[in-house]
Length: 538
Ligand SMILES: Cc1ncc(C[n+]2csc(CCOP(=O)(O)OP(=O)(O)O)c2C)c(N)n1
Ligand SMILES: [Mg+2]
Image 1: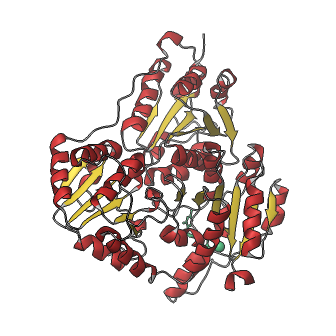
Image 2 (image 1 turned 120 degrees about the vertical axis):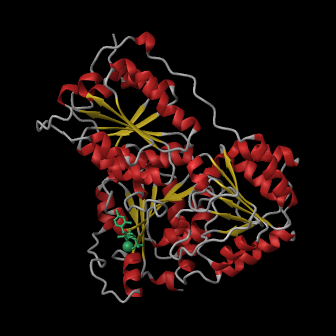
Image 3 (image 1 turned 180 degrees about the vertical axis):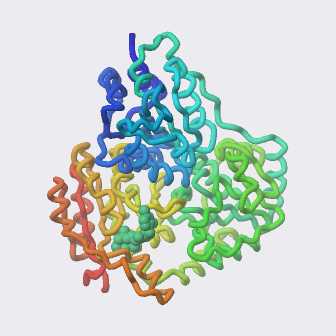
């Protein structure tokens, strides 16, 4: 007879799970007992928050849920921040934790790792949080989790298993995977209305959000057919290939973008919640035309914030494919730079670029070196100056290749561990982490996890000796900059101590060489750029 814990890992494998991120403890060892009988690889983090961010990075690159094993109590509270980031950015994640024995739940006896009402603590950052009270219920509860990942708004799911239940023998014949529902398609009448509006529009505009990445090819074909300028969020980057003439730009805080939205005669927004960080730091309200179509998998999202005049509840790919079919969009029409839509897009782009802060230019040059040395790189960012700059201008080679924690929940400490997850998801692609000296200190221990997992991650560390963004914010508001000029350690020595390669290039040319060399290694490389380096000033 197998135990509940052993069956759990077998079921995970049957659902396609290849990697689990975690830190074992006496409360979760029974989850590990069965692992050697599967092909699931366990990647050990140095802090549960790191495990959660790794799962997040893995999920954003693959579109599949990242899975974590954590202990009751501190393991669970440690991973909450990562779940918060994944919740905010609609990332699929499965967190399996232990919890105290059933007969001890809620008793407050001071048991090891006891966290009163653990499930309630987690519920706010999860699609659902479930306590498995009977081992036989495992197949149903796991199927519920994978049903969310298959066909609902992606979000973290938490399943906690009492330590007596994990060790219980179960009947293997009932431990089976269930057929999962397919993603929802749109109502035919909604598609007909959308087609009528879009087909008749003279000045359409399309806003793409992270949810549209699921239908990237369909979205690209549609905007080219419509000749519609495209505004996209950070998580939609890459849906339009680099240099695409219809790219109008990002960040809806900029007046030229806002005006273009207001002047369009039909707007289609796909898979976006119009989050505040897409309009940061100046979230003036947007004005939409009467013909405002939204496609979203989350019905509530369609009536929040900017409610659509034509709400379409569906998976983005399915809805876009239906619209394309009805409009007769068969294949990609070659993008033309002299079309009316491309001219509108170019105007918005040019007017917006004039409003960027001067600091953007430095980070753009660094990004150019990255793209020249490592053209297909995935850029995983923390929440730091280079990230805000590249959110405005970077054009990755394809979707799911540029993401960071400056969006949504906006935590620090995401970059390094999320980069590890991304590299494990796409081992053949370069992964470059953009992180500041403040953010890296939150999760610097994960460099050890990266060395151990043999991931050739590239960490581009922007060192300005402090919480630069917050210092600027304080100074702009005539607040004395307290708490922002921080002591920063010798990062190169620390990186080497962890077993990483470490270097501080002093020219753009050297930076390019270091990036290329780093990409050939199977150990991580930390490349430090000092914000006051003289080569950046030229
Ligand atoms: C967990 C958490 N604590 C605090 C903040 C507030 N915060 C946002 S950016 C920032 C500065 C980060 O410093 P660093 O990583 O060095 O980036 P820099 O702005 O200097 O480029 C801080 C403290 C946050 N976003 N998340
Ligand atoms: Mg800094």
